[in-house]
Length: 113
Length: 114
Image 1: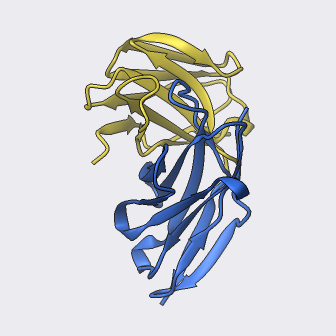
Image 2 (image 1 turned 30 degrees about the vertical axis):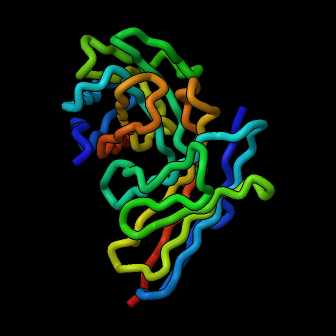
């Protein structure tokens, strides 16, 4: 029971499409994270939000646009993606920013055609 | 910056046999160390963590890991694997109590044969 849900679980989009990934945590946490998991590569931290404020943008291209309207919800807006952006996008949350345990959602499997 | 190496990409083990997954890290001081497991179609679940104290830590699902400072290692072990242990395992490191950035290894895929 992780308490972190992500929708959709699978997404196929063309390079000219605009789509959004949604993450919701039911744990009362204050920090939320987006990670990218590509095949045979380590997880890459993309964005970090703490109390709805962005604290980290790990040199992510502008075609990825995060949004955190409140501490329970995190979005990743996608626009004009490239095929190399195909990956599993994982959301995580933690009680505090430096809390030892990050709880992960099941991820959204994205395929860009 | 810290980094993590998992030398084994794929390990196959028989059910009931022991399992050891290797993890080496690079960091100047004592890091915070983690092992996560990812079953197919699932997110990452924390197995265990090490911050300080006893260098042998116990986790969930019968796993344990040992921190060896001299070898910069944090290897994961299980005495007897079950078919349900087939998954991908990730070692991760954080720089300390004030560092929130987790650096992950590339993962080790474990296959369990009957």
